[in-house]
Length: 206
Image: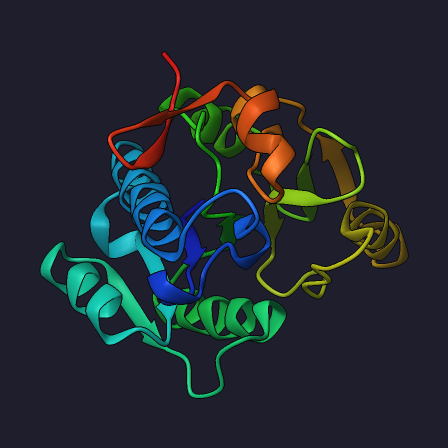
């Protein structure tokens, strides 16, 4: 089974606005850039660059992806995550993939073995969902076949994706791993997940 990883990313200056009470615009940009480059690097450990699809409206990020051999897709109307993922899925289908693995771009503890564990669950007619630590959101999802269920990211997306898999009569699995569960959305996450201030920006505590 051929799998493509889809990584959607906003322009760095536009990311993580909800962190503004704790971080300056410069700090948020640095943090978002670190998230982005790290997510791409981890994905490249498990799949060829040509099987990683970067979806963005940011010319600099798309150029970065092309320079690294990634399959890049430009958004015409940025700001809608589900629409961006649909573009990525269409590109994966054209790329000859049988399944898509969507990965959020704000997972500071994501590691190679997390992606490998998700890929190991892949089988025709099945969906694997990795929820966030609250159990309400979706931070990664593997779908086979492509388009087997719609992308329903947003409030309570874990429940929405699970219900969609059931409605489509697809087998579905929950994969709980720290690398997928721990995302950074709110100022409290910076402290609760072990982030610390260092030289003007936040970095993950080792």
